[in-house]
Length: 224
Figure 1 (cartoon, rainbow, N blue to C red):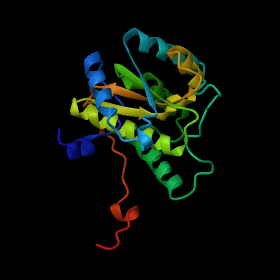
Figure 2: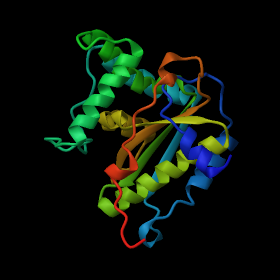
Figure 3: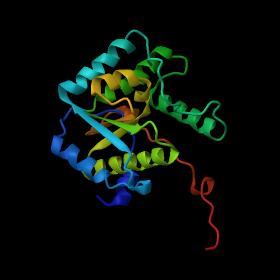
Figure 4: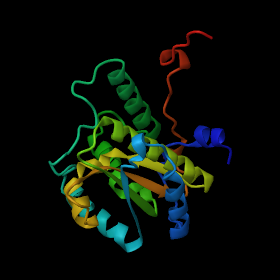
């Protein structure tokens, strides 16, 4: 796949088919993602790739807690959004949420349905593979930027194998559960999970596309 087409066609997949992904394919995607640039070539990322019974066991641990009404375990290690979230970012987040739940037909006051949809993050939307990304907690913003470069490269590499992804920061709400299941060393901080697999093209959720700001909203050209 042409890299420009991979960028255009990438989307956050929220419904996957259960078709297994071979370990060799996952390894090829991660090896290619490892070509992502990083300052000083630190390559600060660490990845755990789970499938099958191992992945189901982790999901079951979280499921047992979310079924009891708990959507996080109270040990959040980093803030997903700054508080307060100023404009224009707060408005973008609000509009995206309204559009997303609207596309699913979930009313604003239907909190039960909204909670079920949030909980779907912790099922990885049915993906057969879950990737869990971590970074050394001593690293700073530049290395977190490097981790973001790795994540984007990973998602584009997946498109090259005709697979789709969903980057899920929501998994950072369960650091203790994930760390204990993976045997993650204490010096590492969980950043996110990535659902990986074959998209269910017929699913209503996969028809949603988040809006993007026009070029003039974020780019300034000088000297051309």
